Image 1 (tube, rainbow, N blue to C red):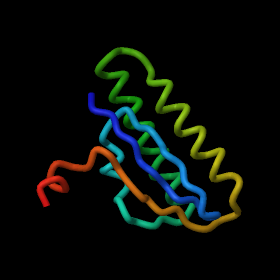
Image 2 (image 1 turned 45 degrees about the horizontal axis):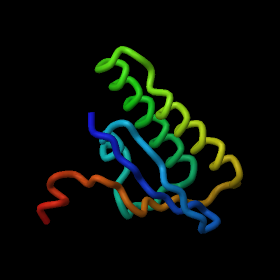
Image 3 (image 1 turned 30 degrees about the horizontal axis):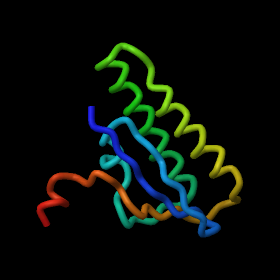
Image 4 (image 1 turned 90 degrees about the vertical axis):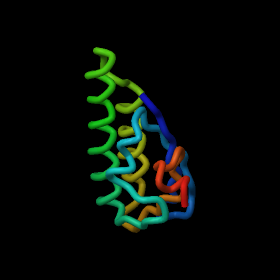
Length: 100
């Protein structure tokens, strides 16, 4: 199962690198997009839940890395009263992105 990283810029300008055990993040987030903080938390949480379920379906066990990343995102977002999150990078990109 391909894994990926995605880098985000938080409302205070700080940046974080995040991990997903699945490329499913591409179905929920777009590189270069800016999301309201709550929307980013909802989208990334849903994607990481799905990624974790894909690991369970494939390997028969829970993906603790997906759970941990979701918890870290929720915790980091809790430090802000609002604002927006920008998706700086998603690697690997989708195959059609590499061709263009």
